[in-house]
Image (spheres, rainbow, N blue to C red):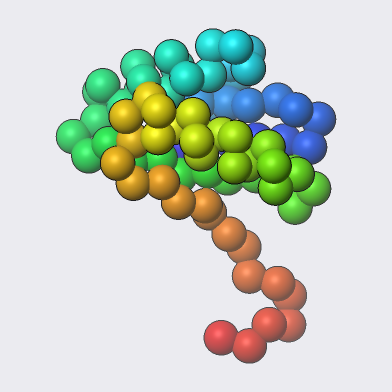
Length: 78
């Protein structure tokens, strides 16, 4: 799980990671996983460009599947 915040902080599996080390941190996390997949979770104010950059780094680090965790809008029909 990768978490991104509006203030630019990024965590991999709950551990804050400096941006320059993000790709390697993702690669290390994927090496301990049977299925190389990444889920990006961010608050609503994370800029889309930043999310795309993170998902691109995840692919470069070896993730075969990337997805974004979402929360339904209040009052939205299911």
